Image 1 (tube, helix red, strand yellow):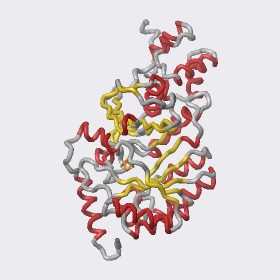
Image 2 (cartoon, protein in one colour):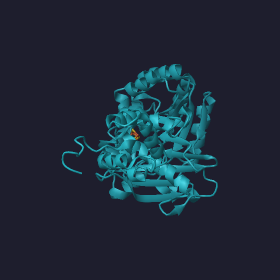
Image 3 (spheres, rainbow, N blue to C red):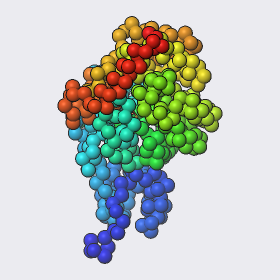
Image 4 (cartoon, rainbow, N blue to C red):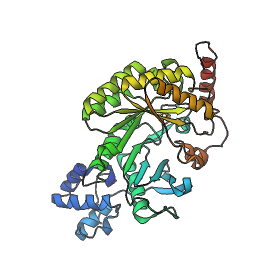
Length: 391
Ligand code: SF4
């Protein structure tokens, strides 16, 4: 390649462009539209090396190879749990940032839990990712590539040198945006990646099999509502009073429960989809009767199903899962208020399962409590010592 031929624009990760984006990109190279469809089909099959795209002319393959950035992530850590049914991957991108992706296998279902940010700025004190702080947004390509890695593993029947169990599906069937970061704080990348997943010529997932989770970023929910796509929206509530939620989910100080409720109602009305509630149950923090009663009332008003997830121990955080008795009592009280509630299996408990934990184990001194977690824990302890915090 001569200097005169060299592309002036910065290298591009093709997965950062959805089908329309690829069409525009290929048209910009002066190529006909069907070349974009061929390129897209290779990418969906996990092939990102233009030299391997044998139905493209050699000249185009060479031009794409000059222009595509080396964006394939490297698998730097891998933990396996649940007899091979849960695979937690630490993927590192070319700038050294590492994020977590989890592949969970069920009969006839393969769910990938993906990350949207390296770290997170929202600072929930029970969350290992929040404790590590925000480092950068993931690009749409980096979000899509997590699904590509999982899909390739399912097709080949192995990942990181480990065979997948017999009967595992040969493709990804469900995607949940519940890994590191807040997906609605990186909305552009989230939406481009949703396009890849939902596109019938892409990963062909129904909107219902894609779950976007949020801790309650109201402007993001409103933007998602405007799109009218019937994605499953999951709100990570974790506290049912503003007083406690201000501590456990600090974004609540900006968008309190009443505002969140309005946004949830708007989403439900626009998409006709139920919004689910996620509740990380933390022993002696949010497992008391008052929280259970308020949660039950909220779930009935929102017409939401509640998923209770007993907390995983997190490095640097003193809180722990509730006792079996407290868990049972909490769930019964939520049900007594008329809400539907399920205790979610704690997938990968032996695989550093909670979001951010594999990274925490990889980069932090395990067992050292972090200042933000210590301060928040002290504030919650003070709240709970007040007489109205009934148990
Ligand atoms: S729980 Fe979610 S929003 Fe809160 S700090 Fe962790 S990753 Fe961020």
